[in-house]
Image (cartoon, rainbow, N blue to C red; front, side, top):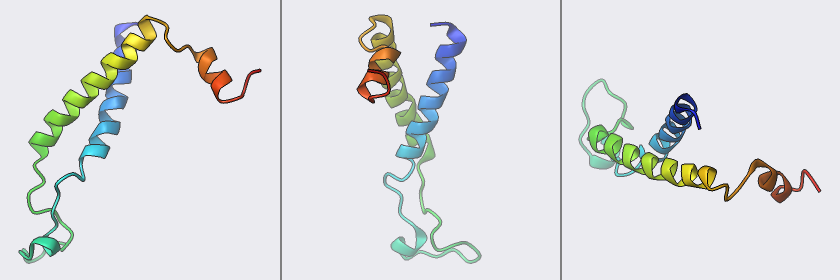
Length: 89
């Protein structure tokens, strides 16, 4: 796989994982009972974005490595996926 293709796939995986990780451990101001004037009650109190970015990077690297190994060793090809979905008989 070319480097640019690998980077593009990793970028897509990273964003998908980020959106999956963002809600973990978030408490809103409404849940915490600590309101700041002029902010939305649903705004997070401590989003811990640094920790979430680290976890996102680690999980994305693991997922990318698994998908890359599947690609390199030809465990699943595009034709396998097409027949799995019943599009080709």
